[in-house]
Image (cartoon, rainbow, N blue to C red; front, side, top):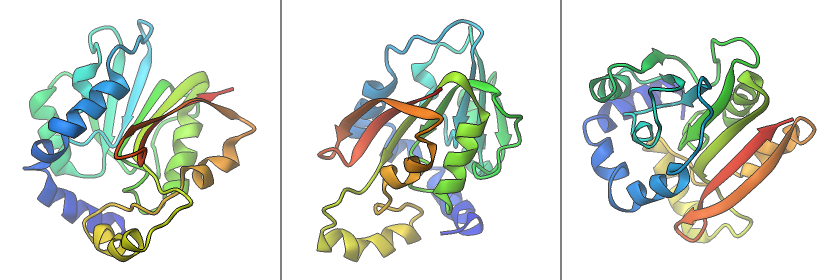
Length: 201
């Protein structure tokens, strides 16, 4: 997995992404993760890898400043068609072009299992989050019970632009002094997909 390959893969995914990942099981999962969130008026919200904008429908966009970034111009084009008023930028999640402590809320939906260097993406998300702000992670992570089947299919899924073998605990351990986990909830597929809420302290 690298940025160039991911750009190609998500160019292919863009026309059909919503069909697979914004309906049925995944739509209900997103609704469970984001529905009913209360975000203070005037908050700055960053969607890291906004994709086609599938998460945006769960947010009141008229009373917060929303910025969405994605490496794929094809995914951004889809998001712009649906949400023309949202500020969308082509940008690498591993190199966010924002000052330190820019955002009250950072949404990281299905990205830490996709980017080539998840530790770098995690560091950038923590960096741009204000003290007292939150990072909401919705993603798939491996557990300590790595089955033979997962080990066999992992390389094939990486070719398709995603990794089922990443550990959230390994990604997070560096930040335990400046962050705390306030929620860690299994969402779908027997807890492989989780909602994790991190507060920067």
